[in-house]
Length: 258
Image 1 (cartoon, helix red, strand yellow):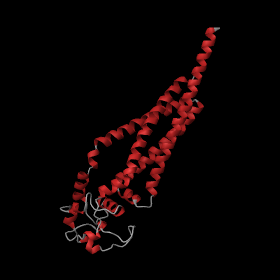
Image 2 (cartoon, one colour):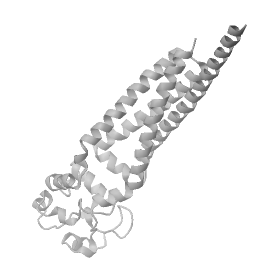
Image 3 (cartoon, helix red, strand yellow):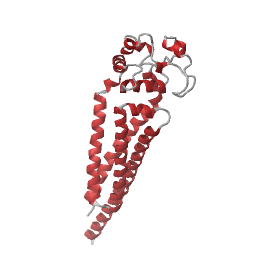
Image 4 (cartoon, one colour):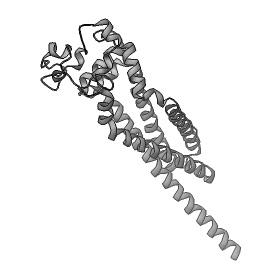
């Protein structure tokens, strides 16, 4: 009788534990579902944003590809969260195993991307951007992707050069446009839109500091995105942690289903 009661008690505890894991798995997958929805929202926002960021993305193949990677990752997390929720509630071993394998692949891909970003971080320095600007920026050739991207950045963020307008000294731009100290994109405008008239284009191009933007684009872009960079970094850590726990719960639930 005692052994029967102990066995029944043990079975009840196992059932309670399995039920707890099931609902924790559901919660974690719901959070993954929300994370995927957030990434989808960010990707769509970048593509339709009316403030000018869309033009920057459209003219830069790397950024253009990155937006669709974000959309793809968001869609995959959205789908995985949905499948994980269904697999947990229905206690379907096939769905749980499929979910575990896919989320493991995503986890490893995100980890590899973070490692690569750390390894190539030197390509995001002021010195690197300044060297590239001096070497490749042409000023008025909008058929050149590099030039048109920089023109869009300087117009959007009201900035000039990487560090300051002095970056255009001894550059390809000055070699091609010897009568212009800075490009047209550096000139101040009367309004806030790219279509607004220049306050004094002639004075600006001749080097008058009063009629040009004097802040460097590196500082302008970092200041604009500083909050979003920290939020994105924190969100990435949270998503990786959630994915790790989701995999653990998925395997525990898979092993516990009879």
